[in-house]
Structures are given as C-alpha cells and as structure tokens.
Image (cartoon, rainbow, N blue to C red):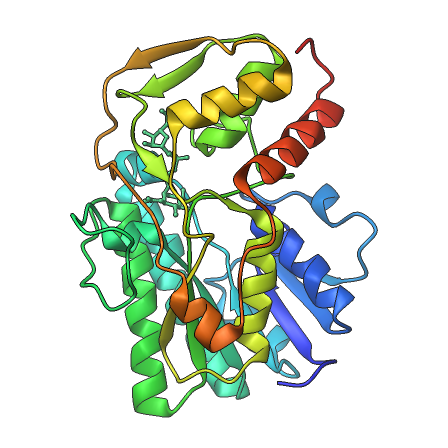
Amino acid sequence: MSAEKQLLITGGAGFIGSHLAQACLERGHRVRILDNFATGLKKNLEGMEVDLVEGDIRDEALLAKIMKDVDGVFHLAALPSVPRSVKDPFASHDNNITGVLRVLIAARDAGAKMVFAGSSSAYGDTEVLPKREDMPVSPLSPYAVTKVAGEHYLKAFARVYGMPTAIVRYFNVFGPRQRNDSPYSGVIAKFCRAALEGEVCKIEGDGLQSRDFTYVADAARGTLLAMEKEVPGGEVINLAGGNRISLLDLVNSLSKFCGSQVRVEHGPDRPGDVKHSQADVSKALALLGFKTEFSFDEGLEKTLEWYRKEHPAPC
Ligand code: UD1
C-alpha cells in the first residue's frame, strides 16, 4: 500500500490508537477515527488533524457511512483487561466479538484492508518460550477468547472473501497516555502512578511472572507496517521486542528512575493470569522488516516522565 491513503482507526482516541494516528499522519495518510470514548479521551488527539467520529463499533449504519472512501481499517476498539472480562464476560464479548464482526463486514463491503489488534493472551500458558505464531492458541480468560475469536474472523474473511486482512499480536504495550486511573489499567501504568505518589505497588503473586513489555511507539509503527506491506491474508504477526521482564525487574527499574526503592506488597495470583509471555519476533522482521527501537528501560523512563508531567507528585 503506497502513502496517502484514507485510513480508519477504531478506538483511535485510545492509548495505542492515538499513537497509531500520529504515526499514520507522519507518513502522510489521512486519518478518520471512530471512538465511543469508553476508555479513549479527546485530549489524546490534541494537535492532530483527524476526522473524529463519535460512535460505537456495533452501529451498522454508522459504519457503512464512515467506511465509504476508506482504503484501510485498523480495528483497535475493544474493552481491554483480563480481570474486566472475568467480572463481566458478556460486555467483553459484545464489544470485542460482535464489534470486530460488524467492522469486518463494513470493511469488506467498502473493499478496504483490515488490520486487527490481537493479543499475546491468545497463547495462554505455553511451556515453550518464546511464543511463535504457529503455536496452537490456548485462551485462558474471556478476554483472550474474544481476541482469538477476532483473529479467526479475520482469517475466515481472508479465506472466503479474499479480503486483505492481517493480525498483529500485541505484547503488553505500555507508554504515555495509557490510563492509570482504573482498576483495569495495565501494570506499568498502575505502578508508575504508585511510584510517583509514594504508594505501594501491589504485586499479584510472587512478582516473577514476566512479560514482553512493548513501548507504544514501537507497537504503533509495527501496526502501520502491517497495513502498508503486502502480507498473506489472515497472517498473524507478533509485535514485540522478544524480551522477558518480570514484575520484580519492573519495580527495580522504577526504583532506579525514581532514585529511591519503590515499595511493594504481595497478594494472591490473579485468576486467568498467564505466568510468562515472550514473543518470537522473527516473523515480524521477515514480513514487515520490523524490529523494536526502544529498550524496556528507555520506554519506561519516557513513560514515567510523561506521568510525572501529567500528575506532578513527590517521587
Ligand atoms: C493481557 C495481555 C496483553 C493485553 C492485555 C489487555 C497476556 C500475557 N497479555 O495483559 O497482551 O494487552 O491483557 O488488557 O495475556 N499485576 C499486578 N498488579 C497490578 C496489576 C497487574 O501484579 O496492580 C500483574 C498481573 O497479575 C499480571 C501482570 O501484572 O501477572 C500483567 O498484568 P496486566 O498489566 O493487567 O496485563 P496482562 O493481563 O498480562
């Protein structure tokens, strides 16, 4: 796909979506955003020239209207969070599975390519690390089920309608603009807030669980590449650095950047949690020429700096 396309980002006012919008604009694309502001914020788009449509991804008529001139759709809108899906599986299903199908049908009818935000949660607790795209999926939580279902829909649409589709599996994306004000916020957002406010970081379990934490600018760049590059229909691609950082490593790095030891408290393991997550990143390199540019510590330092400016506090 050449430059200067009309692109639609569902969930574009959200954390990853707004960074993706920025990356698209920098590449000369025109950007339309559909967001219902369930978790997104208008201020995430400050200074960006985008066509912002407020609405729901399950609104069939609205989708048909805003999809007409669109060349490519990034479907990022979703209710994130494993614990949220454990508390209210129907809401996760309705937003994430019904939502992806509605957007997919509208994109197909408009002749657009679609890139879907998949999740590393699809792998579940595999013994084997790093996790390769050809491993069987094993969703452990309702959230993971919704993301796997979305992937299957994109694969099926590629097969039965010849629709160009691609799936990027995100691995615990973090960075500026990630919400830290909800019980369902990601661990880095929560721990940055706790560290800055001199509060305790509450670790679920022993803190040895690990993640392939990915800085948001890298995730956005990889997602755009999946749209711009020709990839086989329904292809699944891990987007991550290929590293494994434990929560205890995270706390150590936070302490280093704060200049004092961050306090922690341990509680029970989280139901539906995955112990270790680490991506095999060879496919992203082979198909997209993608490699992360930010180390974990570089990303964390930038993130902490951003939260410090947003919420000036002691640390
Ligand atoms: C999962 C997906 C991720 C997806 C995200 C969407 C995996 C491996 N990752 O993230 O790709 O983007 O859902 O929501 O499935 N924790 C604490 N204290 C806290 C918060 C979290 O100890 O206050 C722990 C959790 O128990 C977990 C780890 O930190 O072990 C990461 O949790 P979280 O940031 O919520 O993300 P995942 O559930 O791993």
